[in-house]
Structure formats: structure tokens, C-alpha cells
Length: 365
Image (cartoon, rainbow, N blue to C red; front, side, top):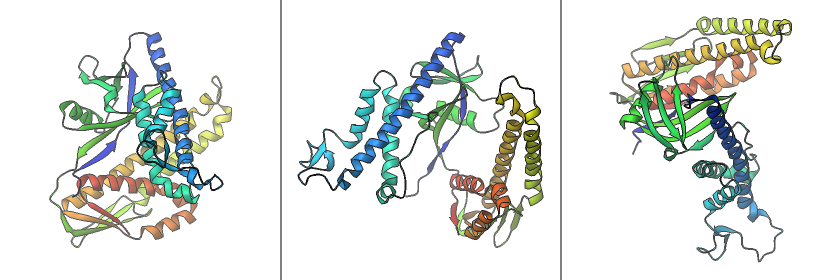
């Protein structure tokens, strides 16, 4: 039976909701401590999982050595004192006891075990190396860690407590659905699943995962629309009775190349910029144009994918076929200019998400 829901993630900036600067700094320091312990725990967990999995490959061990990864109380050949998932959790829990909430360690352990099991065949064949985690990695936590999610009229923000630390959201000029999703969570209409928190340059970002109902449209699975992605025309889609060209080469590339040229001029002039805070001040203009290009591309890709799905819904198309994509990917890899400016994978990701949300089956040829 086809699932009627899908999960999507959003990025929401948070502010520590405490009155004094000292209290806010203390809370931020605690969050950085949790991030550090999570980074260390993640590397330990994957190392232990790998050793557990590969111990049977240590052929030079004595034949009398038991090597079944099971609880010795449940299996006579078992070599573990507890269940496998509990071994790594107890290991990091004992090591970082009192330094990080156990809810974070438990969710981290579950996520890494699931990921490890998924990549296990590649590890065994030597085709993939173990994950190496960065110090600024996001740390996960479940809904149990969140208390009192509500909208505060006085502060004009959503507020909640995460492990007793009060937060409020900063949505700014939000043109997305973040506010609507949070309101629906409070009303009980949308489910809030596991979340992550990321700290970057002193800022706090909440990465919640929402489970929403798919849109209901009157679609006919037998109706097929063929879409082609390219640099000349970002998207060309047609059915038996209609055709639509979405975007043009000039429209997409003109602005992007103009921004790239401005960034290149800024790079050339950076060495003559007034110093004061090291490289941060000198490359300020360069970073500004880099962010401008990213925002422009994200916006155009969102518009193109939205128009494609709206076209399919309008014509009751139940199946969307992306044709001749492998050939075009090969051409893009050979031409550096096309590969750098096409943004094919981002466009594909947006189309896939919006098609799934609308209940349209996507087939890539």
C-alpha cells in the first residue's frame, strides 16, 4: 500500500531566550559541549560497529573463538554481553555520562546503526570507507527533548525548551512554509519527528523533520508527461495535448554569469581592501556575491520545478518521465562550463520532492 505521507526537513534559526548576556553565553557554551561530545561519540560508534562486523574476517583467530554478534544470554555462540544496538550506546553513555543528554546519544546511535547496516555490503567489499565526522556536525534529538512548543504573541515568535534551555525562533522575512508547518504542529495536524541542531559561527539552527500528508489531486496514472532538462531550456515538458517550455538559457545564465563576474572582480580587488579583521573583512564582498549566486540559483530552480509540477497537476498527469538524462549528464561532465552552471542535481532533487508531494510518479530514463 502506497504511503500517504512524506517527510521533509526545514532549517530554522533559533535564539537563546534568556534575559542576560551571561546566561545566553552559558547556554551557548553548553550547546557547543554537546556538539563536541556528539562528534566524538559518532566516531567511536562507527569504529566499534566496524570492528564488530569485521571480527569474523579475522581468520587468524583461534578456531575456538566464538564470533556470533548476539547476546550470549540468548545465543550460546554469542560474544556480546547485551544486544548489539545496546553495546555501542552503553559504550558512549558510560564515557560521556553527565556531559550530554542521553536522548542525543540514543538517537545518534540509532541513526548511525541504520546508516551502517545500509552501507555494510560496500564496507565488506572494501568499496567504501567509514564515515569521518566533522567537529561542527549536527546532533540529533527526538521529540521527547522538546517541551512547551507554542507561539508567543508578545515575542512574535515560536518558543520551546530543549533539555531545559529556552529558545525562540527567528524566521525573519519568511517566504516559505516554516511558519505554517510549526502552526500545524501546535494544532496537532502535522507530526514533528526527529530533529537535528547545528551550530555555525555562533548561530543556532534547528533542523526539524515534519511528516505531512501528500496533496490530493485528481490525477490519472495512465497519462504520461515527458520532460527534458537541459541548459538551453531548463525544462521542456509535453503531453499528448500540451507543451510547455520553462525558462531559457538567457534567463537562467545571464544573471548567474553576471554575479560570477562581479565575484571575480571582487576577488581581484580583495588584496587592496582595508584590513581590520584579517581575511574576514577583505573577502566580505566575495562572500556576499557567493551567497547572492546561491540564493539566485535556489530561487530559479524552485520556480522551474514548481511550474513543472503545476503543469502536470493542471493536465491530470499521474506519471512524469524525465527522458535522455544519462546522455546529458555525460555531456555535462565533459564540459566544465555546463557542469558548473547547469545545477542539474539540485533541479532533480526539487522535482522529485514536489512530484512525491503531489502524488505524481517520477521515472528517470
